[in-house]
Image 1 (cartoon, rainbow, N blue to C red):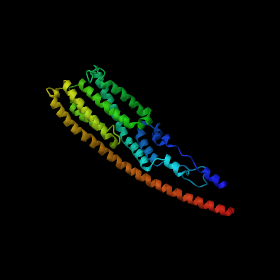
Image 2: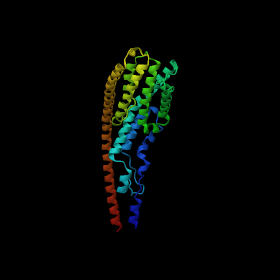
Image 3: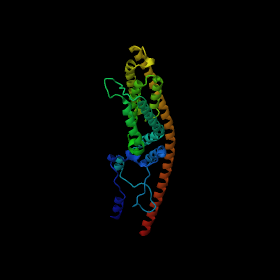
Image 4: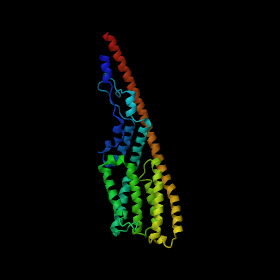
Length: 311
């Protein structure tokens, strides 16, 4: 009976998968200072990838390591190695892009505010839709998102992909709205700069985002054909419909590889740095497990000696 009771005390019930604790790891750095946030995210990523296993307080003296659980409960509650590594890389990527992401948010807000202050007259992107001047809406949404970067960081990181797509789409509509307000600016050049910024400042995993870039750039080109035909922009004066379509198709063909190749190159750099940190952490974890196994064996030998002595 004593042996059975000892075995039962060493069995713990694992958290069910519905708790999704591995997705709530972003809450660890909710109180981190703004200047230390990227480093905190990266460190949290590797801590999540190899969680520290605490000793069982009911274990015999000298025994350390995780508390034993049944194989079935472990399979149900613990994420796989690939899932943990994927989530760790996601946080590592967010940490890499976060500084330029914050700078880009501030710059875009300033551009939209300056445009609205200098040209306060509402200029709808689509004349048939009076409320289609996206400068004000873009400024409000970006201001809210910027405040969330410092007041609700856990939620911001948890929904980082949605935030990036929202910023990219609203930024495209705001840029087209400003085109109608200030037709004298070189919008062809600014368009390339804005598209390139979307692949640098608002990026996440390339495998998940590249389709969003292609669809957004296609919609931008289609809308730009309409804007070129209905806006008094000097560089588009006297342009025919066919000429506008050909120009936008050419622009689309140039922007897609520019944005995708830039983002892919940046992600490869992040992959290289992440793999180095992951490998170092794997070595450290293997060494820790080896030490734990040695201590367990020693504790087991000591328990066997005590049992023989008691007999």
